[in-house]
Image (cartoon, rainbow, N blue to C red; front, side, top):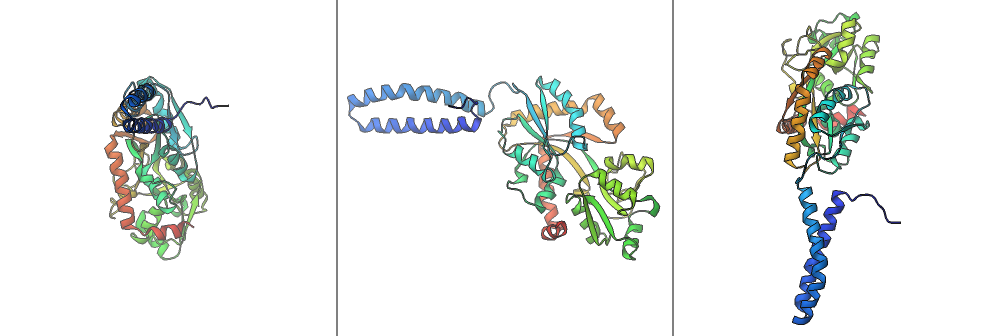
Length: 366
């Protein structure tokens, strides 16, 4: 039985190419025949090819972005588990975006491979503006460098920047740690040994702190989420851990952990009493000191659709209720356009390989 599933845009595109090819071949063969035969042959074949070509023109116009957009529901892929930081932010913003666009937005949690599974799904989706991704550009890029997926992560096209969460080093309160230099001294004299972080994603920060700042840890312990990192530090399983500031906020307020240093020079809304790395007299590491939240679409997505969707997301971010929630939860939500997302992508793919040995990172992650 023939399938009744609708044709995808790629199917339509291939059909158009085939139709044009048949039409061109028909004209060539007709030209090679005699005048009378050629006239009859062209009349018969032309009727068929004209219909096909007309359909192709309409379909290709649609692929080029003509027509009303959006005209159907959209899908926002979140490549992490439901209930995590990215998921919570998306679910806060997207109802407003949906109202702005007049179409439903389905949130599809697609965890796996530290975010790269969902990224790959979006990379291979139709470039029509109906499927987009929310992912932290620095963290996912570093993961792609360490464990390259079967697609070019850096080829994703920027949609907009949503905001960011500075990363921070937290410490067990029993240590009574007095900043990064104190931690460096204690690792050097052997009092402290290991450090924890979120999978391979925060390994680059740990390696930079060791190789360029002198935090001489011996082993990096990988955890499956920010919550487990915070719990490991609170229990003393590891003395220090690297997490986002928002992930540590509750544990800091309860006294279960303490802030040692904020790794981004802009400081932290969630950890206002913890000094930044530059405030403590060290060079900045801003290029990897924040989890910058961006949204992405497949390559070749039409620019007009990117602009429409990006502006709707801007409305969702800048809404009063969203900003009130962001302030209460310690999340920085701030819209920036597509070209800024692309700039962040380019920056991390240029600077990380220049400042750290990727092969060493792979060895550390094993």
